[in-house]
Length: 104
Image (cartoon, rainbow, N blue to C red; front, side, top):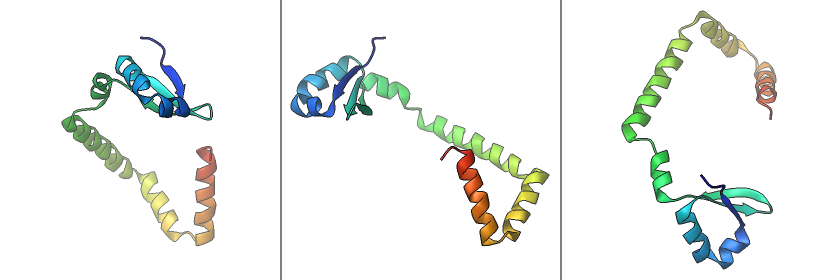
């Protein structure tokens, strides 16, 4: 597979037809201020990326089952009791800890 073609948004604006033709052959990455913001891909690649609707439902159902099973654990119930008994200040501090833990 060839490396994606990278073009600036201004080139796309000035030469959309040419960029469109290139995107039919392979991926085109459109950059704005030197940063990638949009990818144009051939329709065959797009279709290959889209899961069948039944698969999406199966995946969500499986994930839901895992979450429900997780909630049955004793630690989860204890954590929920603690959360519902917490003050607004305690909830705020917990939120900030979780925010920092996720790298924000």
